[in-house]
Length: 366
Image (cartoon, rainbow, N blue to C red; front, top):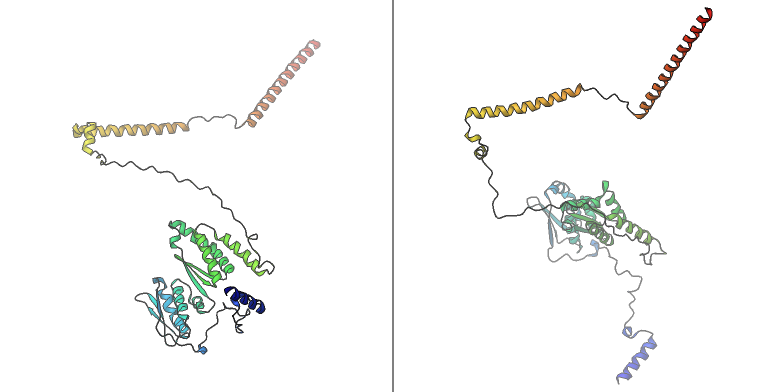
């Protein structure tokens, strides 16, 4: 019987041209491939959605330095939230902001958006920028980076890497991810679409794990270009992305500080002045002998100073070494001396020849 039923089902499926599991499924004219099921439909007050039955509220604390700014911008925030039927409250004694639904609330998800708004205001984001979170396609993420690095100096250096010189790295991150990024204290606040938020989170976490953000920025730039190219959009992008190798950079070795050996015994007692006098025998001298000893020590010190001064003065009267300054001068002086000796010899020879000529002349005259 079972085999007969199977044969019948297979014959029916062959006739209808549908698979077995979709044999009895009817066509739905309202559901086709042209419909985007992931699209978020905007909610308007004209749709007439019922107000929430129970009140939902969220509160957040803000730091003391934000109190002045929040107090100044609070009327603007209340006006913005009133459009959506959300009540807000500012408590300056506790330092908190509260948002809650009312009977006029027409959007069921707006309370979550209002919660994100007060969170962003507490994290030093300007009110005009924070109010953009109430839009449908805008989301936010607050990344806590405090516990990612233990050492305070290292944490400050890596956080500064995210900002870069004059905020250039932060601006590059914003351009690549299409997000608004704010680094404040121990958190990084991000506003943008979901894909951008994911990219910024991975970039920030890797930066705190000692991977420079410039590498991830370079990858994201290449991905952005490939996504805009229709020929390569559906292909695997691994061959286009750069592969960075890890380099072991030599670091300065810290000097090894030897720890002192701990002993259960206390340190030796320092000797008193009396003990030192007893050791040197000064304790047994009378006042006159003590004074004489002090004067003798002073005289010895003065004599030593005097001898040093005399030696210093005597150095000024020592004749300097008048030798030639260098070999070139020495060779020139030697050459001059040779010329002088030659001239002298020549003059002597002329004198002798003149004398001989005079003698010959006188002998001839006679």
